Each structure stands twice: as structure tokens, then as C-alpha cells.
Image 1 (cartoon, one colour):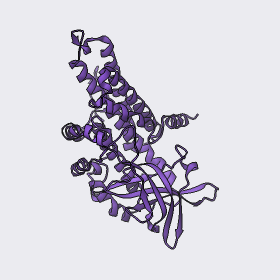
Image 2: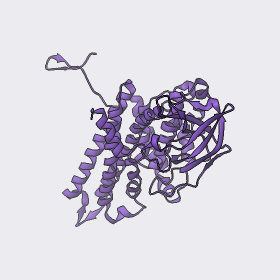
Image 3: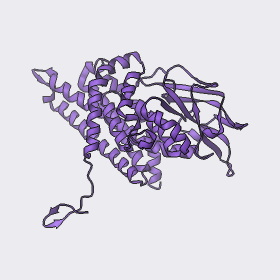
Length: 397
């Protein structure tokens, strides 16, 4: 590869994290949509807790739900990094909208693309990629938490060419919207020869007899995101609705969660950037002791530290995404990105609230929403403790 000449010798460019023209155009488009369309609605949606069907439809029209999927399945022919860029820009304004996109693609549609049969892909991906339909994934169970395999109680038995599923799943994003058409669930389907529990993934088209959703959770944040508990009672689906190999469901979703952690890191970076944006704006406008509070070193240093954290976190998820796109192992990098980004998002939200003073405690200011939305990032799709376990294991500990 030809490179620039420095000191009379040719130098190879090793790293270049500048966005190419196409990705930068996508980023700017989503940034404009977030600021002009999402921002005016964000406070209202947060207050009412209503699901933003109109915004989802517009994002579908923009092709955001199809970003990482090939055109032959109704996608945009992009990649997972493009999805992350879109999620980051949305989260600068509203995490509820950002997580709706992230969960629909990373958890709802991506497993079908990765592990589905050709028939399953052609049946479901065009609908999911267009945003016409949303998909969800049921993994976590009440009382299970991070012990997904050990805590799993949902069972699926094969009877007369049908899977009969019984169990309950908790904290399921996009589970009960009017446009949710598919929920894939993990279930115990038997026992392996090694004596370990056999866990498979099964696609459940909804609405369906035996499938029910509880009322929306009353949550600290993400108010406009649909999150519910689901229950399956003798819910029957065809045998061919098995996703991937029998007994491969848990392994498939460990891999899916590695990818999802990069997307959650992007969301966390967006929230951290949103806190920074709001703090800079407020510090320049707010007067105290006859001058803008931005002139005070205590405030300026807080904001400088917010920028350092956000910048570093963005580089972390860019690096994880780079390894993913190269097809290289990236479990450690994904865990690092998710861990660091989620924790600095919480820190930036706290500092932004402090900079705003009493106004930071008022819901009319975006930082109050960011503060409430941030904490779940240290919990969802793998807690900070789980990320540390993964990183330690990757280091051979």
C-alpha cells in the first residue's frame, strides 16, 4: 500500500478512523433527522411514554432498519458499523428512539440473517429491514438475570411436527407494539449427550394463541421504548421455526450479544455526546457573578473531561467495529467498548446535571432525561460485571 513520504521515506498508514464519504453522509442525515424531527418530540414522548410509531415509520423510510442487510433481503447493503453510526446520532437526542432501532436490528433481525435458513430470511428480513414490522428476542427470564443458561425455565417440546412452548421472558424490548410481528425465544429443548442443557432458539410469529404480553414496565428511563414481560402458554409454532441448529440457541446468542455490545457502546457514546452538547450550550448561556459559567475553570474542566471520555469511548467502539468487519475475533474489544462507554455515559450524565444545577433536575432540560436513561446502559445486554469477566477471561485469567 502506497503511503505518504516523511523524512524522505515512505510511511504506511496503519490506522485511519476518519469516516468515508458515504458513512459521513449517513451520519449527517441521521444527525439532521434527530435534531429536526426527533428532538421536538423527545420531551413529549418521555412524559407520555407513548411508543413513537411515526418516528419508526420515518426511520423505516430512511432505510435505517435495513442498514446492515444485503439488498437481496430488502436491506441497504451497508454494514454493522453504519448501523452504529445511526444509533449514536439518535442517542445524542433520545435514547428511547435509539434503543428501538438497536434492539429491532441487533436482536430482532440480525439472528435471522446470521442463522436463519434461506426461506426464513426471505420471509422475514424484507419486513424487518423496512421497519414495517419489528422483531424482538426473548432471552432473559424472571429470576435468571445474568445466569441465562442456568436460570432458564422456558421449555419447548416437539409434538406432532410443532414446538409447544411454555415459559416467561422478562425485559423484552419491542415485545408488544402494534407492529411487532416476530419474537424469537430461547428454550430448553432437551439434554445434550454431555449432560448439559440443550437450549434452542425458536421463532414465534405474533400475535398468536398462547402468546401474551404484560403491560409496559414502569421504568426509570427509556420511557418511549416498549419493554414488557412475555408469557408463552402451550404456544405452538411449526417445527421449521427452529432458528439455527437444535441446541445451538445459547451459543448463537452469545455471539449475537458480542455484536450487540458494540451497538450499545455506540448508543452510550451518543448519550455521552448529547450530555456534552447540552453542557457546552448551557455553560455559554448561563450567567453567574456577571459572566458565563463557561469562564469558570471548575465548569470548563468538567466539560473538558466529558469530551475526553466521549472521544475515548468512541475510539473504543470504532476499534471493536473495525475488528468485527474484518472478521477477526472481537469479544474482548466489544466488552471493553461496552463497559467503558456505558460507565462514562453515566458519568457524563451526572456531570451534565451538576453543570445545569437545579435546572438539571427539571425534565424540561434534556440532561434530566439523559441522566435517567444512562443507568440501564451499565445493565442491559450484559452488566458491567459481566463485561469485566469477559475481559479477564480473554486475558487468560
